[in-house]
Length: 374
Image 1 (cartoon, one colour):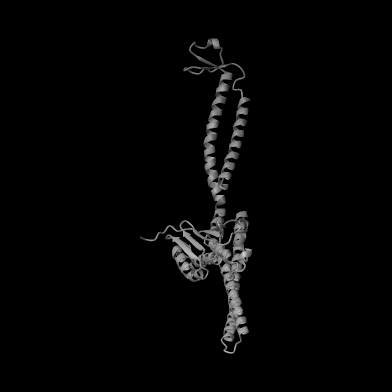
Image 2 (tube, rainbow, N blue to C red; image 1 turned 45 degrees about the vertical axis):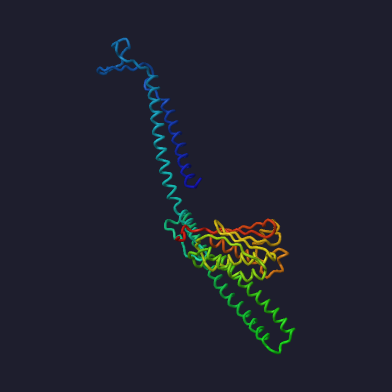
C-alpha cells in the first residue's frame, strides 16, 4: 500500500472516530432531554389549544402521543440523520484526505523522479524545492547537496581515469619500442631474443590488463553516449574478429541470431560481446564449440572443462579464475567487464555450468520497440 493511500486511510479513520464519538455524545445528551416530564401531546388539524387540558376533553378524532413516544421518535430521527450526514462527510473526508496527502507528498515524488533521472554522466539534475523551510525542504536541500558532492566526485574520477590511462600507457609503449629495437639488432644473441620475446609477451599482458581496468572503470561510471545499436550485427562482427583465435585453438562457432536493437554505447557493447566470445574460446578444449544464440537473450556457451556450480558466482569478481584456467592468457577481468557493461545498460548477467563441461553465460539487455524494416 502506498504512503498516500495509508495517509488517506488515517485521515478518514480519525475523522470517522471523531464523528462516531460526536454522534454518541449528541445521542446521550438527547437521551437526557425530556420535552414533557409527564402527560401527553395532542395533535389534530384544528386550532391549537392554548392551555393544557384533560385527555377526556379532547375530540374523539384527536391523535394522542405520549412524551416517551415523542422522545423516542426524536432520538431515532436524529440518530439516522446523523449517520447519513456522517457517511456523506466521510466520503468528503476521504477525498479531501487524498488531495491533502497528494500535496504533502508532492515534494517526495519530485525527489523520487529526480533520483530516477540521475546517471553517472547526468548529475546535473537538482530538485530546488520552493517553499517554507520545513522538513521536506530540508530533505530536498540535503539531497541537492549530496548530488553536488557526487558530481564533484565523479568529475575527479573521470580526470583520474584519463590521467591514469595516459600515464600507464606511455611507459608501456616506450618499453615495447625499446624491446622491439633490441630484437631488431642483427647482433642480438638467441638468449637476448628469447628474453625479448618474453618481455614483449609480459608487456602485452600488462597493456591488456590496463585496458581492461580502464574499461571496467568506464562502464562502472555509466554511459557517456547512447545510441541505437543492432546487437546482432555486433555479435556477427565480433565472431568474425575471433575466427583466427578460434582457429588457433581448434574451436568452431555455432551462431544463430535475429535482429535485436538496443540503446547504449556501441563500444561497450562490442567489448561485452567480444569478452564473452574470447572467454568461450580461451577456456575451451581442442575440437570444442562455442554456441552463440541471440533471441530474447544473448546466450554464449562453450564445451570447456567442468565448472563447479559453487565457483560460478566468483567468476564475476575481478581477477577471479578457476585453477585450471590460470594457464590461459586472460587477465581475469572478462566476466567482470561483461557484468559491469550489462548493468550500465540496465541489463543483467547470469551464468551456469554447461552440461558435460564448460560454461553458459546469459545476458539480458533491454530491447527497444523498433524493428528492422523488412
